[in-house]
Structure formats: structure tokens, C-alpha cells
Length: 321
Image: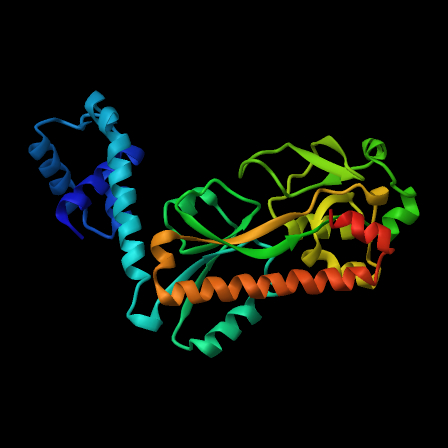
């Protein structure tokens, strides 16, 4: 590791924990080495960064001015190391793939099929999708729901996402039919689509025959995973307003879940596979993006065909709108 970068990393850790010993343990170094490097950094900068007469060490004002930039420097070093570690020769390249946490059923087979064509390819699968991390180039390829603001990226359609409002069969038998948005106030609703990673509330958009309603959503449990939300619904804890079709088609076919709201639904949307323009120039990555988009599109289409056999045609056509 570059000596200067290591000194800054030591500074960031000591600023956080106030301890030479704890910093040494985290970096797998001995305490005298950590202390020496921190003093060397202070000497090069011509300032004292910490008051060593206090325990834990107390940052000097200049340290507080520098900490933001030091963290950026260390973060950049980590990203550079990640990029280099994830790049090997030719087809042995690792493709860092960012996906949602509901892709488990279909993803392994898709990656297996691609490796049958390109057997040296390796994958680092990262879930769930984090757009900020993707913009920071911490993944090469990501699935995207709807059109995101990514001006430096190439998009390939992966099909139409259809959303199903659903409840368990037992829940409906116990609580009765749920036919309109007005009925929702009498039920606990679960969702997984939030504007930010740690948001607790969200507005759902529901549509039927061209009429659009905004439905505020707040629940006693916020699920960041659609699989968790689905499991809560299957256990009869409440209802779901927008389960992705590919995530619930098995349960719909088996009768474990039933559609609710009589045609009111979250509008369907086109979804995409995204890749940075620079990575698009790499033949293997470009081949994977095209392959991945086609495979996911085929999954969505097959789920629509299966849904057609489960619900009446007018209801099916409404859900696709």
C-alpha cells in the first residue's frame, strides 16, 4: 500500500476511534508503526492533528477541516483497488453484477447459460441494487427499474414489469374481498418500493381504466426485500400492493396468492439492464448485457403467458397497462 495513502487511512481511523492501538488492530499493523506514520503525516503537513494528552485522542480543529477530504481519498483508493482486483485477463474477467434481492429463482440458471458460452467468465453478484454505488462504478452491470437518470450509461430493455396487488387465499376468506383503494384503510399493507434506501413511507400510484390515484403507504414493518414482503403476505399478516409478477407467479398459479383490488394496480413499466459507456466498449461485458437483457425479457414474457391462464382476460389486459 502506498505509504502516503496508508498515513491518511490511519488518520481517518484515529479520527473515528481516537486510539492508536485500535487502529493498529484494524489495519493489522503494530502500534509503533501506526504512531510513526501518523507523526510522519503531521510532519509533512506541518500541523498537529490530535491532542495526545487526552484519551481517546481529541482531534484538533485542522483535523476536522481535513477529515472529509481524507475520507474521499481513502474511498477512492478502495475503489481503485476494487477495480484492479476485479479485472483479470481477457475472458477471465470478473463481471460485477448488481441485481434486486428477488432475482434468486432465475438468476443462477441465466449465469450458468452464459458461462457455457464463455466458460472463463466469473461473476460477483451484488444485491440489492444501489444506484449511488452503481454510479460510483462499484458494479459493471445493473438491473434498473424504469428509466433512471444515468446520462453516461447504455440501457437495454429487459421486458415489461407487471405488478400484482395480492393477498393470501386464507386472508381473503377471513377478511373478505378487497375491491377498491378505499378498502385499504381496513387492512395492513406491505410494500418494498421506497424512494430511498432507508425510507419508511412511500406513495403508491394505483391505476384502473386510465384513472390514477396516489395511495400513501405506511406500515408497522418496512420491508426492503420483496421476498420478505411476499412471505409476510403469505403468512396472512397483511396484503401487498405491488408484487412483481415474476416474484409471485408460482403462488398465483398454486392459489396461495390471489389478486385483489379488482383491476386497480401499480402501472406496469419497462425495465432495463444498464452499463457504463466505457464498459460497453468491452466485448465480453457488452455480450453479457445483451444476453442478460434477452434472458430477463424472456422470463417476464413467460410469466405473462402463465398469468393469462390464471385470471380473466379483461383483468389481465388491465394489469398490463
